[in-house]
Structures are given as C-alpha cells and as structure tokens.
Length: 474
Ligand code: GLN
Image (cartoon, rainbow, N blue to C red; front, side, top):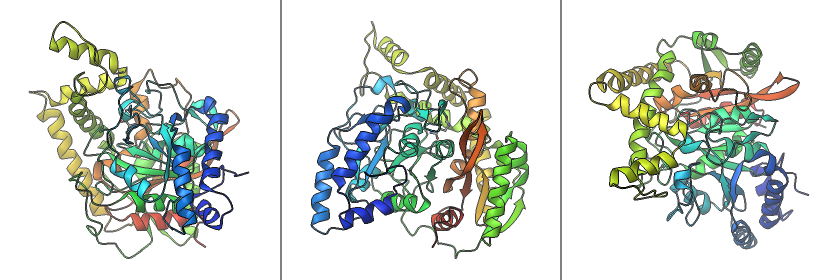
C-alpha cells in the first residue's frame, strides 16, 4: 500500500526509480484516494480519464532509464490553467463547457518534466475569494475539519495535497490564493517572484499580480516544482530571464514588521504560534530584528482597487461571443447582459462593478491613479528594507480556517484574510507559507502558517530558510 499522506515528491521519485512501485500504481493510489475522500472534501472538479495512460507512458520512460525531475509524479492543477483537450472553467458557470485548445506553459513544463496531470481542482470563481465558497461548483472543505473552509481561491489544490489525494498541485496567487489556503490546510504554498513563471494559459484575474506556484508537503518539493515551472516564455512578455536578478550571498537576517503584525487582528494563539516560529529561527542561528514599514498597512486597500480594475478589464472578454456560455436576447447588448448575468456569480459581478467604477472617468485619478502611486511607494519601501534583511516574516493569516458560511455575508471580513499575503503581490516578491503547527478551535487542531517573503528574485534564500525551518536540511 502506498501511503499518500506522508509521501513526498522526493521519496516517490526514489521509489519509482528503485522500482518499489510504478507510476501506474502511484496514480491508481491517487485515484482511489479521490474516490474514498473527495465526496466529503470536494477538492477536484475532475479527475482526468487519461491519467493512467499518462502513467503508463511515464513507466515506459522509467524502464528506459530516463531521469526527469517529476517523472511519474501525479500533480493536480487549478481549474484556471489550461490543459489541452480538457475543460478549464475557472470555477465559473460562464466557462462550464470551455475546452482548452492549448496548454498553459506551466502545465507544459510539468509535462516535459515527466509529471502526470491527475485532474483539475476547485477554486473561487475566477480566483476571486479566500474560501472557495465562490465556486460555481460547490465548496471545498478543509481536510482537518469538514465544517471549515480550505481557504482560497486555490482551495481545491490545497485540499488535494493536504487530504493525501495527490503529491503536489499548482495554484495561482494574486493576493494570497496559494499561501492562505496552504496555511489553512497545513501544507507548503509558494508564490514566485512576479515574472518568474509564465502566465500564458492562466485565465487572468489581475495580470500585474497573478503568479502560478506550487502546493507541496515540503519546501524541498516546492523548490522542485518551482525549478520546473519557472523561466522566460516568449508567450508572456512579463517573464524574466533566469539570471535577471543577482543572487545575494546567503546572509541570515529576518525582519519582522512589528506594528503590522501587532495591529492586524491576529488571534492570540496564532500570535503565540508566530512567536514560537521566531524563536525557532533564532535557535537556527538567524538574526531576527524588528523593522518598521510605514506603508505596508495600505497594501490591502491598494489591492482592492488595482485587482478589480484589472479583473473588470480582463473579464470583458466573456461576452457570450468568443468563449463559453451564450444567452441570446433581442439585441447584441442584451445578449451581453443576459450572458454575463447568468454566467457570473455575485462576487465576480461585485468586482466588475468595483473595477469599472475605479476606472471610470472622473474617478480614475482619485482611485486607480492613487492606488498605482501607493503601489510604487509600498514597493520602494519593501525593496529598501531588503538591503538590511533577507527574509520578511509574518503570520500567513490572522486566524486559522473559518467556518463555512461565516464570512460570506461580509466581504470585508473575507478580504481581511489576505492582510499579510497581499504585500508580496503588490511588490512582486517571492513568498512562501510554511506549516507552523496548529491552534485549537472547538477541540479541533487547525493548521496555521508562517509567511516568508524575500527580495525580488531571491527564491533560493527563501527556500533555504524554509528548509531550515522545516528541519529538511540534513
Ligand atoms: N483572496 C484574494 C481575493 O479574493 C486573493 C485572490 C487570489 O490570490 N487569487 O482577491
């Protein structure tokens, strides 16, 4: 029996090479796990029917002695990434029947590295949300407590790994959508530097903030996936060359934005858990200092202007003509209203309205223009601080996973789940959430995470500190 709950990519690769099990057996184990558990959790929207065929091809290559970083490893992908020939709905009714005609570059990179694409995972519609409750296809539940959310918007990808149904998955992170569900479900979730991973074939939320990244059980596994998916891609002009940033030699200085951490509604036991993580870093030989970042507190406000502005523009393409759902009215404009009225959920409509408003004539300068300036200010402040520190450390979220339905009536309380994750998107920084233990809620142990962010392009420093913290070195 293959024990998926503890199996990592590294261990599985060794076992596959040694012939302890085959890629087919591993993939079958994943498929059985989804059959056994996913009725409750609902991490997957679809397990692909060609998964075993892919596994057989991997087995052939393994027999031939071919060695690839992900050969024979089943990986799940969020439903907003295109996999040629398969449906990609972005959690929306409007794309319910949309079938991808090509694969996202990140998906192609996985395939070239030998991975098996197991299936597509549930998400908040168009990646808008922090709980996966905005999916048009039902809620993903937290494997640690089925009454609670798995976080979002990549809740399905997080729960698929945390629930022991697949070894790794891809998510997308615009304001925290990989790191926050990672923390809520107790797995590693990583967002690369903006421009490191191609967005070609990713259904866009906010193009200047979106990045694809991995969910895994270990930092080492996350780095393996990151190495496979990153790189310059002519299909995404914002991608950068591998050597675009000079790697700093590895110092060990951690900065904690004290006022920010103290001021943002962090629940007492989450705070205590964070302080324990700080002590751990100290015991590992890291220098820890308090720092002051005056403008960090504006990140969430800035995000909720920039993101809807870009989202409203990106979603204009769903007009009932080019893609997906088409509802006919008397006139062209009526087709448009009917299609979008029926195809978009409430949160998507809210953001289209917000975004259109902040971009509209007369308000553009007051809202969008100011947010762009504030973004520059926050970015400059963060870049400056990385001259003194290597890692910025905060909790990933102020609270553990909340109950299903608890925040759906109050969008603002939902938005606050991203208070610590959003700054990395605003400044384009690489950022990773590591499981840091649990806190008790109603006698259930719920995972929480710590968030490490580094300067642009300094993924290797971040991964090194992550492996240190998770005791993966030696
Ligand atoms: N929760 C945030 C939002 O709703 C972040 C989403 C994301 O990163 N895709 O916008």
